[in-house]
Length: 159
Image 1 (tube, rainbow, N blue to C red):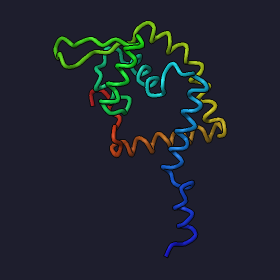
Image 2 (cartoon, one colour):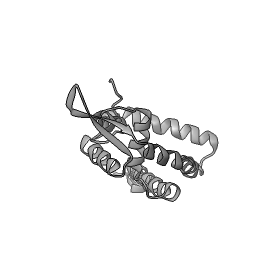
Image 3 (cartoon, rainbow, N blue to C red):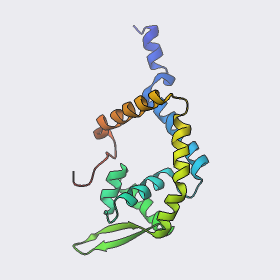
Image 4 (cartoon, one colour):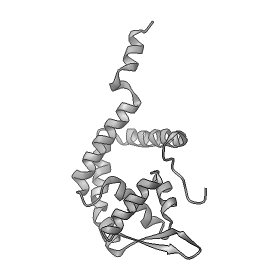
């Protein structure tokens, strides 16, 4: 028999997945408010990771961004079309391409830094500083501990 407590737990507004989806909707909305539409959130993540890992291959970059390889390839192609990254064939493996951010890509990333900081502030603003710290720790743990359940698990280079 279903209790009132069980019914409450089954309410979509009390489901972690539903709340995470809503949080993602809010995050994306704030992303465009603060950073404009020069890049999508996934393009921003890919470009930012590329800046930290110059010369990485496309498959490894997709794993680092936790997107599937076909999405990673599409995102990289769009960023290349925009002149924000370059792909060069690796001499030891003609099927892999080394990726580097272009000077234009680096300038764009730099121009978005203040907006990215405002985005973080706005998204976490309803929480006290202590709650923000706890929330980020718990959210990171939730993602880390469930990584293998993802359709595109995070994969660090060399692991």
